[in-house]
Length: 351
Image (cartoon, rainbow, N blue to C red):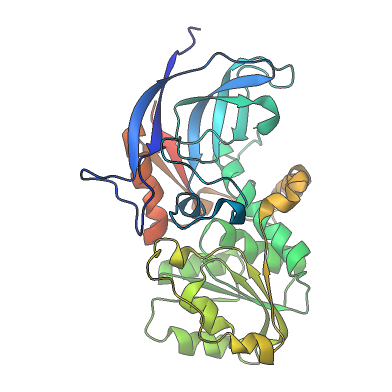
């Protein structure tokens, strides 16, 4: 096999103030071709097959981001856009990772990339399960859901829980783990269409309410009568603000994400009901999955086992895989912010 010497990549051309710009004369990203460096000992050369699309990527390119306040280094202008992905090893200078292996890692929006072997994880194929699920239900989203529920808010069978973004990559796993593995007494999902809500209920939620419905607040108030102990927040903004009024005394919030504000650098939605935190003695618990990343392999094995037993639903409806030309990578990523996906949104690069 002739090894490639050049690679296409998308670099950050300008940090966006507001929604990223994909066209015109001042786009957020720029497509370029670069030479592939010679591998060093302990490195592997990866060919990117799939890219993970994650809301947090937007925070990595924000002009307001302070390096010392981020959990990962921000993407600098001129650098490859960061992203998790699945890749095939086409060259290896590490005895730990063989040529031909499929791995998860951080190739970014690059056709080929040289990575330290220690930074990638070899995938063990599961019969009947597409490898793309190792970016979703069996990847960091599933890990995030399990970690936050068990280690952050310490959910139990006595708790009722509301999950926003319940049809997304993390939310779909939160619903299932809370209901089917932990046995929470009531699981209430929030999603953006009636169709998504029915899917969330199929996953195990007792009920799911549509936040775009004119009666959303009335519907959610009815379903949280008597109040709930836990709110798993994937969206922030107005829904988080309202949920502060629906939590029981000593309630806990797992602060997982704030996608509603990611493209609002100039108009971030704040909290009007923060006094509820005082009066009801609430805990808002922020967390980042890399704090517990050493446990990824054991949690993945646990989730695979639960899938094999039929406890967890992980299938075609759990992800949306979009076959994409390399030139259209940013466009597929932007689907996240219009609610265009159900489950994990994955970019499959066309050969």
